[in-house]
Figure 1: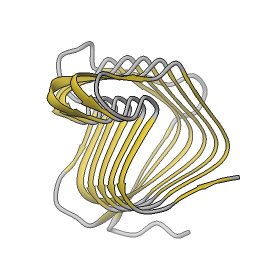
Figure 2: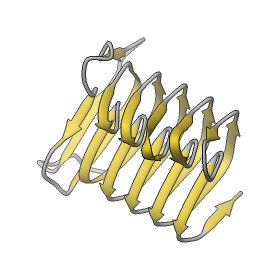
Figure 3: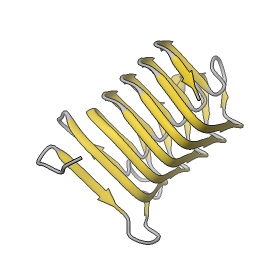
Length: 173
């Protein structure tokens, strides 16, 4: 895949931690549609209404070797909120992310319109609290395809302890 003016790449070399310290979101992508590639990073300590670590209205998000840890949102996507676009994740992990609200969607990820494809991914100890839907993942319209995935100790206060899919198909390999 080539890099052009509609593609953003953030790649860590060595141990790269980006910590928002609970003050703000870690990465915001405005406009779009874009292609965003994150590789070999830890995104942590983000806090926002939507997507504590990552927010985009329109983007395809590619993750390789990314850990999203201890991020909080007050409405949707404790770690990631994506309005439209697909998420493709490889060797990535979401841990201890939280969304807490009356109508909390996706403790780790809230994807409004698009597919989530994960290979060798782990979701653990994520939570949708308050009136929560999808402890780890909330997909409104799209397909969920997981291969070699672990979903452990995720919780939701209302529906979908690990995953809530409103409309779409699920494929587990």
